[in-house]
Image 1 (cartoon, rainbow, N blue to C red):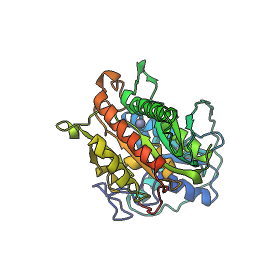
Image 2 (image 1 turned 30 degrees about the vertical axis):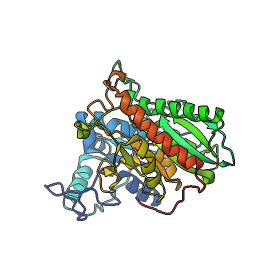
Image 3 (image 1 turned 45 degrees about the vertical axis):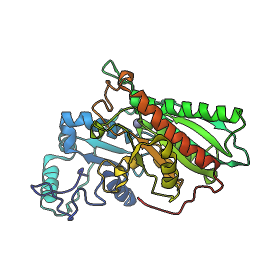
Image 4 (image 1 turned 180 degrees about the horizontal axis):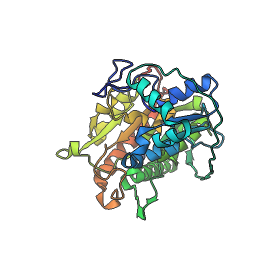
Length: 364
Ligand SMILES: [Zn+2]
């Protein structure tokens, strides 16, 4: 199978009028179709693999394709476990130049490739399994008269590790969210000690494996400790310690993402909470056509998939995003504190109001 889809000289798809990719031509959809037709093994010939500079960018996505969580589901390529990405050169070596040439010619002409050939092929693969273990960390604060209902406050504590001898510190991503969750937990615990504990229970959860594809939160929702049906909302914090270039001149802001997707209650609650913190709430990334797709890119999304209303608090990307230069000296502690306070006030209301946050919307 060739990766991608046939395109004209301007890069426009030949199969549809769509601007980006034609639906159904992504690797996953094609693997599903091939698996549905009984394919036992799949070789995906990727032109981009031949380009070593592209490889650096693509490698994480491709290694992720064979990654799975014990007791969970595979993230991609689950349709044909024997799937391999190979270079055009390797494809030629396996299938012969004539087959590859006519296949490429058919694709370029927008025609289906119909020729079939059969014969033995001997391939030797060295497969290995690298097992890594990691943990989500849950802190439970029991509520009072509504203790069976649970509010989650989350952040991921993993980052990118060490590469080429360089430590990727992840101070903003997501050290900022992790310390915010701990500070908020401390504040609620203090309130409880003073006799003002929340009516609903609160779970403060820092998760692992976010950077590998939301693995910790995925594992949690597939193996929940508290029934998902009783989980009223998730407030997720992923990067709240920096100022992005968009807001260089007015740094008193936070991006609020996903608040309008599943519940009409969350925006008014969050805005009322913000009467104390007075941040500019920037909603631009709620636009479903925004190419960054941030709504899908952090742990709250795993909760949203189970129709649990969420708010994602975020400061946007910056020059140090996913670089070894995301260090603590660049954190704006004043902004980190203010944004964490907004999450706290919002959590306070969700945990204490009479009515559970309702689920009355279903937006992408
Ligand atoms: Zn992050």
